[in-house]
Image 1 (tube, rainbow, N blue to C red):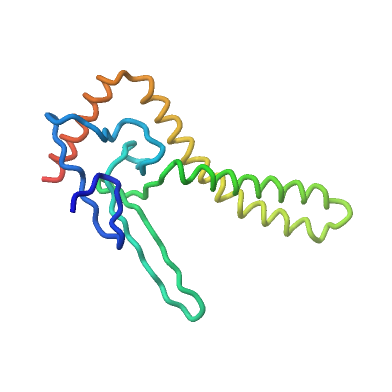
Image 2: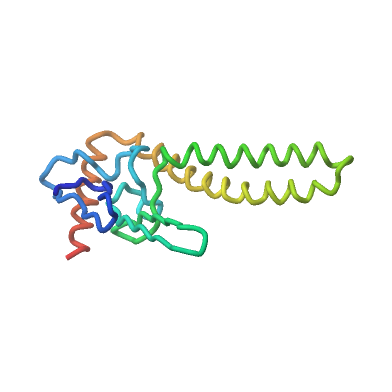
Length: 167
């Protein structure tokens, strides 16, 4: 069964790098920004990934944990198109909780700590997502300035270097 880099088999498992070399045309250049593909923040590229699914069975819940690990450096990867809406929700909830804390400041002081705790929790997650999205946006901006020929040349070198490291 043929799969492209970054595609996920239904049951998880290892996903191999697309068998490209410097002589072949790069249809899926790992150095061309694409918000719909998973991106490694360490390698600054759309590498292939290992898709791991772990299920835990506890007394009252069945939890599923999914992780996309870069095949090159084993760092967690993320999909910018999927992270952006979640980031906006978390930052929006943070803003609303802070506004509630300001509104309740004088009349209902007992509830202010709860609102601030709620804002801190969602803000921590939201700002973490904002940090990774900022890394993605800065990288994408730098890559879009480059010419198509330059991106293709860099992509070929990147893939050849990766293949040499794997051997």
